[in-house]
Image 1 (tube, rainbow, N blue to C red):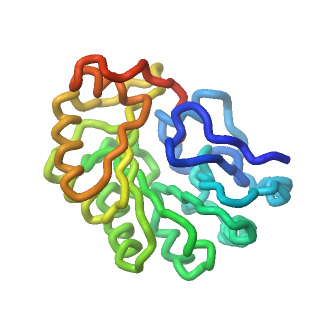
Image 2: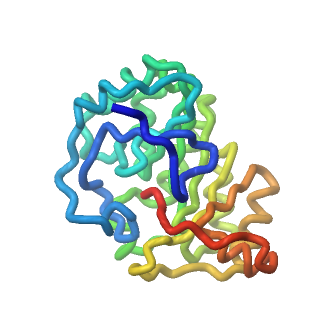
Length: 240
């Protein structure tokens, strides 16, 4: 089996995606692009994926289609995936809305060549939208511990929802991210409480005081309003 090249509205810095676990994510976020495709089967570890040649010199997003660190994921599955990834000379991105599970594996050798990322889409709590995931502040507290441990961190603000500027900047800052990625809801059949273009502009400016900020392709519509149609049309696919 071949490794999947990163396409669509994936992170620009990621060269490939790798999804050894497949099926329904416990967090069940309504805006997830995977939920819009079909009724998902229960989460499972695909053993055939542990035979994929991951190559070398790649930057691989592991778990782009489901949260492989959710509370219901067996630790044996996580260990098998980490051990397999460590057998190849690559860099890896692991992302989760439940970063507390990262803490169990900070001493795993694969972490020396990995970036750990969490989603902080707002500082607020929207119960009908955020559902089973830990609260944004809980995620930030854990990521602060990970950053203090010395492992590089990223933050993704996608889908960015209405926020309180000072509070959201505080949460992101707690994570000490090397990079923040701002993205918009790309499930056009789902309506979310979105910020205005001016609010996004202010957020970007505040975040750039302490970290690099990348605006994802699906948020170009915000940037066009801010900078006057400088950007192309958005790409509509999006990771979870």
